Image (cartoon, rainbow, N blue to C red):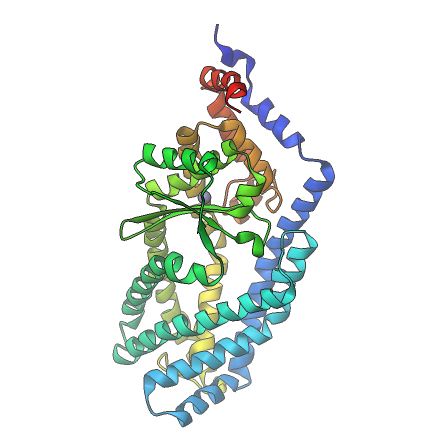
Length: 407
Ligand SMILES: [Zn+2]
């Protein structure tokens, strides 16, 4: 007799979903649905700021000021970029502080007081000025030298930059915001390293990120830079999850790593960036003939036209939100399946999925999930775990019996 006759994945999924009290579910639904509107408000506010800079001639004045300070074109670009970043950050600050600070506190997801939060924001702005400024200097150099084909070379340069940045980010940027320490507790470290070895990941250590200084969210990742494979989990995960749940999460993260999701993502993003630059070229030519006179800027190589390019690229990615989300969600689902097969902890996986419902609506409609979800919904993830469990009932059952002795 097959034991799976007694186990219905759909019923088990519903049983898990029913464990969340209605008030908690209403809260996380409200938080997540508010995020849909924030995508729109952020886009509209940014678009408004960019148009304001163009229409008031402020952008042209920022260019003039940069040209007055220095005759060196690359430095002019950097000076313009710095003014642009500071001004747009100030003008979008009210929405930023609502979204990033007050709203996060209202839903109990943030742990930082205002000072440290603002400090992190300033660090982010500084990094955006420095790294964005370097990219802008390269891009404007290309636009001025290659007036017809800049869009293609610009896309290539952006991709090289993006690849470089994603390689250095975990090593040089992430430590500016959080501390990383070695996980010493063998009861947690050893099962993670065993799972890593079983899947061909040669890490010797597990690192803990002090994410609780910013938020209550559970998270982890596995990265590799020049053969230095690095397994990181955050302290919220450590505090809030059992060893089995941690294994389930790390199985998922190792899936991302083994299936090269970072590199695939760069490839996917690369295609988008090429289309995005083609759109920048067409869109800017169209806008220059209509409004160039009024804005005091006529050519792509003119720094004063930067808000136009920002407006176009924001529009491009705003429209493509569902596509980008679907790409991400598909990879996340792959990592879930990998994690189930690697960690073999379907119930722990379901428990973690419930914990993620702190900030992600558990049970959305299909179209809603398609449009807005960059990870699968709790329902989809728990169902995948229960479906896996239904096919491995003997194994899971035996382990549950044996678990009592080990604890
Ligand atoms: Zn993931």
